[in-house]
Image (tube, rainbow, N blue to C red; front, side, top):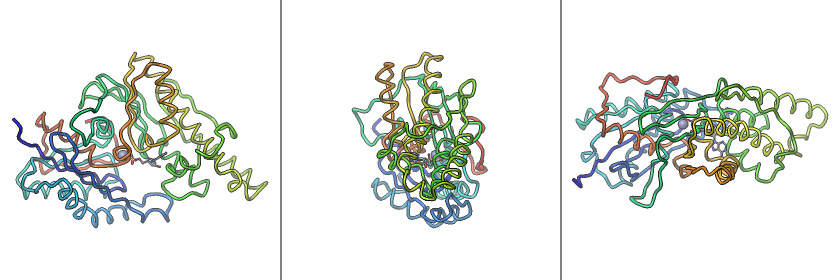
Length: 343
Ligand code: KG4
Ligand code: ZN
């Protein structure tokens, strides 16, 4: 009964190479290697990302096993992200996972990256004293590639209620940061600068689509035209107003997200609300939602920082639920680039 169930998990969908080890869903190690190589280019360069994954994957897996104090022969399965993401990057993780599992004679488990971001809400290094959302709950998943409101019926049964029709929230942060002359990834930098700025100083448009979908490309264009105009009047406009610009942009993105989340919670009559994905690390979004939760009687769930941005711990948790359901895959498993549902 008390037999351990060690799972090795691999995440390589974008520009983080990560490996985690879990025992019955509890996280024992979560090693993440970022890729500085993209900074100079203002965004992730896919070919450079695949090469960096190739360099990182073995040391990252080795470190995760050592930190967890688990021998590879004691693993029960290997879980890995099979999409959505960058094809070359995914190929590194999926090929490694398949060959490693084949050599050990253990099963492999495919994990959908977007489902895993949500199950980061169930990732913990502790055995006890952790509270999890009750089903069904709503999750606002906000990452660099996706923005979704998801109704979570069960660990593995999820329904997308709304999503972005163009840029993702993280993409909006990063592209606007680039317009402001900040390096990639700009989201965390805007967050840091915003703390010192006035969010009401500049008014940018909140795009309101019908239903629960989002759009962020209009905001990016509005900021671009505004900045170009101001720079033609005063070339030092950005330097003089950076904190207020960051605070105003962050405020606008947070408003766009929160308005739709409130609409979804009201129409579904759901009070357990989670947030997930890289942008859930944003301090403005966190504090705005905390205030909203207080006023509305929501129970709000936010993953610890290490499980917000891309990480393999969330893949390990999802892998464990699939392991319990015996949802194993075969060696002909192939990665996919685009999101086409929570499977
Ligand atoms: O989930 P994630 O690590 O990767 C994807 O699956 O895309 O999300 C990365 C995104 C980037 O766009 C990054 O700028 C954004 O999350 N991000 C933030 C913050 N931390 C990460 N955006 C705003 N505020 C932050 N503190
Ligand atoms: Zn992600």
